[in-house]
Length: 111
Image 1: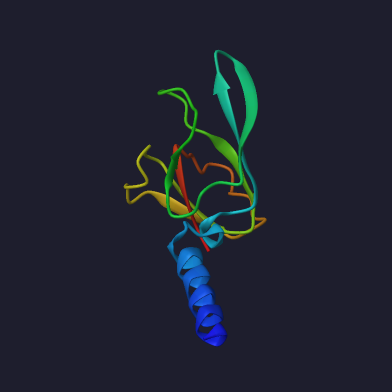
Image 2: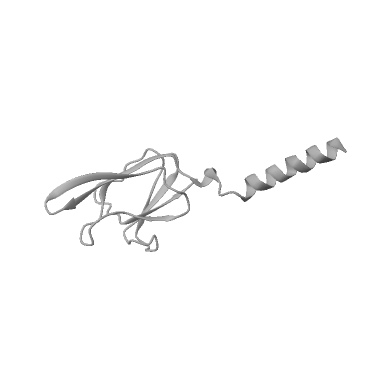
């Protein structure tokens, strides 16, 4: 009887862990980028972004981000549009910086 209760408790705990949104989907680190607004250049970043979600960057409508650096432990796919949907994209491995000329408005992380 005691063994059944232990097994049931272990299976219940395992089921709860599987049902939770997994931290395996999270990217750890910072994704940084520069943006120019009214003649000023600003450096900003996203810390520990959620994986498999499209992240729209905080950029002015007329000025996409540039100097993009993927300082996370996940692969980042950067897009020119703000919905991670255009066919204009670039893939950055962890630790990689995009070449100059790559303009970004959204990013998607995958592990």
